[in-house]
Length: 347
Ligand code: MG
Image (cartoon, rainbow, N blue to C red; front, side, top):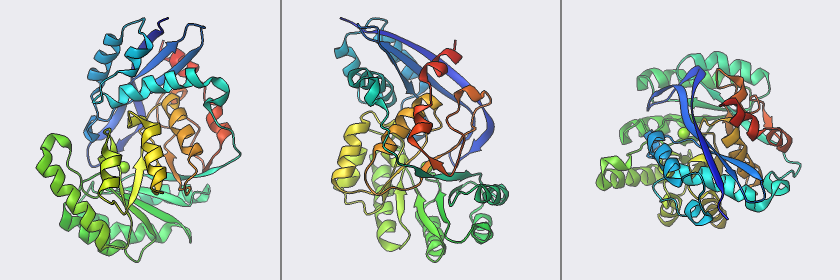
């Protein structure tokens, strides 16, 4: 018996724009999929690509949804091409939940995970850090690689000075630096409370295999040369990326945005097998996709690191937000997310 497959594309303005080294986000585009099985059970998934990371575009994802058609067989849903990783993610999420049954969809072990507070780029980070610290956050993430390197390095000490004792600061360069710039930062980080530096350098696959190889070699070199851990983020969006970095002996951390991975369970099983240090992170998806991503994060039984989900309120329309950023995330916060409400809000 075929499934009933439907999808709705969304374009949601953000409450406050998010600036990274790649781009300024003023809205989020993606697709919500709805899948109904022969018994009438309904589950949802989210397709939230980030093309700047090397995923498919939303247009390509929409075309793929159209090709799936309204009454696909299960085989069709399982044979979505590798290069459409975000489509596979969204469809697999819905299909996986149908196969598991509702009760097992969200684990409810009584764990609370710390959440990292996301700080804006530049000097506005100071005020935000102070207010987030007052509300109890102790892990902070600052976007760097956005302004002049000298100005940002000068701000680093000011920012560290406003953080409570024992706090950890993550720096996310979104691949903005060349090797020399990364070295300047890593020299500076060595004696400061920097938990890790995320994606100091990056070359997207569109630049060709030689550029990618050169940057990957540089990342490995930097990871060996400096005491501050490095973390991969942009480097981990295609099927096989996790496996390739494991194969290269990556000594650093892995930032996993579950929403961007075609085969989340496969990638996490591999990371677990090598006892990798994993940080789960938002892809600025809606609450619906975040529910699946947070479920994966709360089920991870490796060393817990603060979750990179301190992003809400994110959307102008609060119906698409996940639980408001708080210093801890609990399974009941995730269980409260109602996927159908997100779907209905797009009507
Ligand atoms: Mg990042």
